[in-house]
Length: 252
Image 1 (cartoon, rainbow, N blue to C red):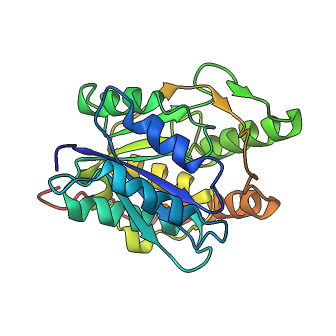
Image 2: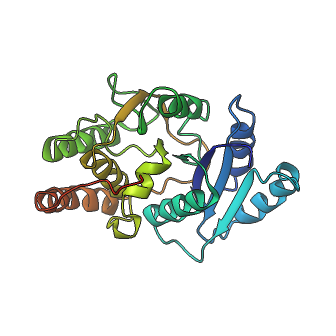
């Protein structure tokens, strides 16, 4: 394994984007490996990835991994599956990214360097660290997302502007410390819970400003239920944290 960094990309019906996003990541100056976690896409996303594996993988190095799951099991569980895979394979840095180019693949390098050279344990591709950097979203959705992050910041006390961000780089030791099997949220609130736990354990979190661009191809997976889970779950998560001790186990 030549690379020390794995980019985890969950997919469901992303045939319009999957080839281009993989090729773009592999064209970056930093050598990233990619793991696609596909939730039984009926549009053939996984089949496209399998075809690409014949081009990008060799006998000595597997750069493109694929895990197939049966049905939509949730964004959070997809990432947890990917984290466990990456830890088992020995990657030191594990990154989250969407498949639809809402996250610019070039920013993967900045997130990686913030951890690998900048001393961060978690680097977050932030839409709100320097204002509101979102392109092609309706104003209602921008306001909902922005104030959702502000609400989380106010309730939890976490010093992060973009608490719902899904463009993140984790050091392996962070994921080994967080008990992944006990993560409660499965939707986008998963992103909040992961950052909250990393912060509570005392890891260093850094925001890297990015520009978030709404997808051009394919359909958004956002829904009102996702925001509902986040709104009510954050209060419960915060209260429960008052009665817990966050101690990093020896060796992590």
